[in-house]
Length: 572
Ligand SMILES: Cc1cc2nc3c(=O)[nH]c(=O)nc-3n(C[C@H](O)[C@H](O)[C@H](O)COP(=O)(O)OP(=O)(O)OC[C@H]3O[C@@H](n4cnc5c(N)ncnc54)[C@H](O)[C@@H]3O)c2cc1C
Image: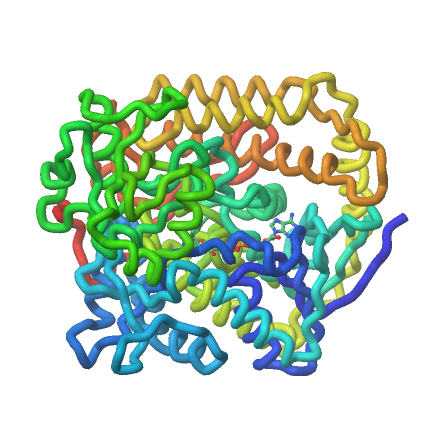
């Protein structure tokens, strides 16, 4: 039995991008009805765990500039960012910080009352505005609070979206299961904003929430939209051992050092001017090189790691500015950063790739936009700078919300085309017959473990052709195994069913990452191929687009927009 509900605008995802979009759409057009759909409660979206800061050139009277923010972003991206997009990010950000401030964001402040900023990797100015080390939590609270002022916004919390319904020309609706009751719904609407976040749970060593799976990416992919630049996965240098929970780059921004087993600050060999505050791709590679050359440590679990030393920062400063990571270190690793060094290792932290959009966040399907980490508007190219992602959520949340509202006001929508009911029936069959009653023999959680371990092993900081090919072979084998095995037959709160749907999307997204990585025979940003160690601008200064095909992803090339900065070698 399918229940139908109608809205004007559906926003899938209630993280920073989704909430920012909801506010902007409601402001633009108070008349429209907006549904914010989320498979978790609003404040459990991964955005609440953002720690270190949000980048913006707000101190232009003290020496910073938008231009410098743009250049740092483009250089950090290893010249794969679309430069017009980076320009938009950086020029809009100062106003977004002011807007959050007006909405009540409790920024950390200097003694003179101005919003404080801390150093972050890859920037030539201390540009990360912050709120202790819990910036995402406070930003989410500020946005959610602001959302309460708009009657037109409704929350469908703990609803699991499954597919985009469209007629090949335009968007018609989103199918979703209300997890509490198990009821299958179609949310018919005129426009959709996909804000489903990153997919870092594709890796077993990951900083992400367990809900960060590629459902939204896969929905767009299956609906015929391209996924772009998925081979670029960011590994953050400091995932604490053994859990992988993030120790923010802010810890190095406040003066923390990375040490090898000889007690050296080894970054002097790799980035002598920026040291520990080089971009993440460079720091992560340096750590793995130190480990490979025998200057690492063995964690008690047997895994290689390096050490982060914050002891000289001092207990008072740690409590004031890094209270969250102090708690994490003590609770999850038994180490007090004021007294002990922390065992850390590069950890999956961000997806530069995502749903292909233009500079406005518009996808290839009329009526559908994407914003936040799920989108790839090409701000970050092949390596994102820390603190630029929460910024991206603010800027493209605002833009897509406004554009979707305008589209609805202009009469956008199905254009009188009949609703494709047969596609809803097809979706019901796909998920209930294909997945719920799939009847496979393999344990899906074992499949997920094997998949995420494979990604960790074969598509980590360093990759090579044979390793990636072996990874792809294993993923395809897992895909073939009849694993669609849902043990729980319940209708209500069937999280087992949701998990199996997540794994289904993970297998397709993993394939896209691996195929893209095999195809990109160069090293650029986060994609470091030991068998092709050089950047190759003649052959690969382009984005990768991957389109769905049941046999295998179809790859295409997409040009990079260069406005002012010709690619040069990155040195820090
Ligand atoms: C530990 C950590 C720390 C970070 N620190 C920083 C930082 O200091 N500065 C910075 O700039 N960036 C940071 N980042 C990155 C940044 O936080 C994220 O990129 C950003 O918050 C993503 O926001 P989002 O709105 O795109 O998605 P998310 O906040 O991930 O939200 C995704 C939403 O989509 C919903 N969703 C997903 N699938 C479905 C489905 N099938 N059905 C219904 N709903 C669905 C989820 O329920 C959720 O509401 C950090 C990331 C992590 C993991």
